Length: 285
Length: 325
Image (cartoon, rainbow over all chains, first blue to last red; front, side, top):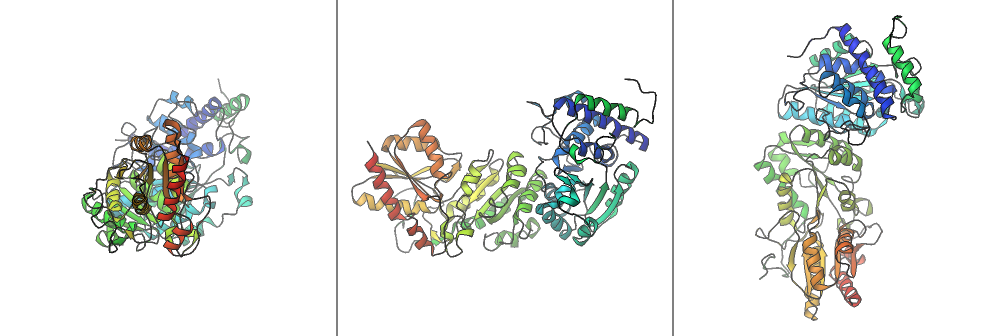
């Protein structure tokens, strides 16, 4: 039986994962900061409330599948997996190093529990749809498939091929969560290639669309539960997030998409996270 | 008679059928034997011969529309969910258009997706250069974890398709459009990764793949009539290459001609050259596309124009023999 977490406990877990992310990236010396921090609340909701899974049996056949399409935000997944018990927390410090199971972009063959290998954008939704098709239409299985996508990869044609396929086949066992943080490497999404209206686009592809505050874990959990109740369509949850969330100088700055903090920046970031941005004043290192 | 080849080898009435037919027959038999086999197709169900499987196993046939990138990644997901997916399209699009999806979601991921690429080679004919895949074996051969099979006729194509089910991990199967002689039989051995000496010889070696193996046999017969003894090897598995058989033949004959309906760079010719450069450098000639695209025409016209037919092969053999020390 999986442990039940209260919403305040889930918030606290997200905060711990954000600290893990900063520490890992500092140690790694490269990697992405903004996306992982922005998705910490969604990952806390998934790993500690929504997903049916067992960290001791990563290949349990009845588990829910979580596909991370935008593989570059994997530090947040690694942090969630470590905190959930898939591997020791100290292994997080091997991120991006030679011989590590925690590759710069996730590789299934190296770390059980990742479900697939991802990074190049636009093909995660296809893989998730392939699994969901088998689960629903061939095997009649109970497990569900979750797919995390970035907003930037909504520019990729492959994403829409998958959206069309899932809509056609009414893959109601598929829930996609779109990290709507409005940034990508080269700038703000609406400057690079306008994506809106995303809701109307997915609805036109026969999806049920929900929108949540991606930092409100209760909303994320509720939306995932609602998605389970939609019988005839795949569901998309547009999670509005702040890239770099929790670290004031990273928030909403696209420059933080693809770089790690320096030591001084990491120290400042950790101090902010430990005091919840100054709300707790009795912080001791 | 030769134990590998049909009795009617050089008869005018030899049966002709495209290798893609063997793919279709193989899919059907594989589907009957193994309920985990699923077939995906990108709007080319009849042409890739996925049709018979689709009719008999509609619940295991998935039409994805004109979306080869999606097809590859969908199949990766299905393989991860326990299925053995075959993805069917033209080789120009799969593994052409969807190369990155194959690399990331199938090859790095090392999942058992079987890629059926039809309409490979110039013998596609009138459709012209866009639809004549000539780079597909190179694309697939350089990809770690990927296996590459290029069957020589309908019968071998069927065997290769059935074999792909049990070959672990990703496999690329290459098929042609045109009807070509069916010159092997049900009894001809097919072992994945093993090249077969179809005709033994002493003066030179032809290593051929795909339907052009028949042209190589024709060339060998003509040369035999003029007292030149040429060994013909059917190399259906391009990767992993049967180095032992090829090196042994080169040691015996002292020169090699490779024959393929593909760019000479990166395909069978490249693969054989890499092996011989390391193990036994001998003079080589390469019959294939010489760094150019195809064009419209009948298959016979195109094979002749690009020197891929028996005459072209004969010429290449004579050339390589002159280079022998």
